[in-house]
Length: 226
Ligand SMILES: C[S@@+](CC[C@H](N)C(=O)[O-])C[C@H]1O[C@@H](n2cnc3c(N)ncnc32)[C@H](O)[C@@H]1O
Image (tube, rainbow, N blue to C red; front, top):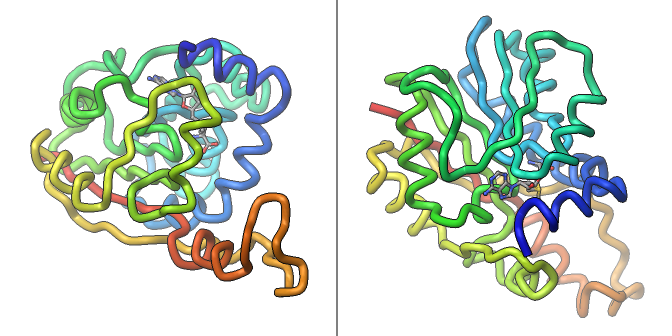
């Protein structure tokens, strides 16, 4: 199935807002770390409902924000959530970013990068559009060390790339980005029931759920363009 078909269906049944709610638990901490200065231009790769760009406008006075998504329905929904003239949502693919060389100050992506058909090429595209010193904040919950995410591929018909933290750093460097940092941001907001509630429909044990959210949380890799 194509990215478009898969995620148009998600947008049509409201999963864009559902993802926003869940991802916000860790995304807000990563977004707060971005070195955005007033007036900066931001690109959100795989923006879904588009919440991240709106947050950077509100909290860090970003100038122009672009949210790019391969799903026209996601883009349609995102547009309907704001009337801010400095926020634009565009349909596009990670393979060919519709932006000029050096035109973006910072790129953000949450739970989207690993859907890229060719993630190495996407990183080259990110580097191309970033201005010197611009950053790429790449946040993922689906990655090798997070063993609790491995089964997610079975539930979705779009090929996903499962890199380890090391592989993310190596791929960033291969694309010409230097790695400014990498860490796990724990999700401290998901409610974890007491031990007697386990097993649940989703979790065999409380320990597994704690590990998934409180230990692995979101892997954030930060790249800087030369
Ligand atoms: C799991 S959702 C995450 C959405 C949002 N970033 C969030 O945190 O809720 C992944 C999004 O990436 C988009 N996407 C996946 N692959 C893409 C590609 N190759 N090009 C553009 N968008 C893509 C999907 O359409 C979807 O909206």
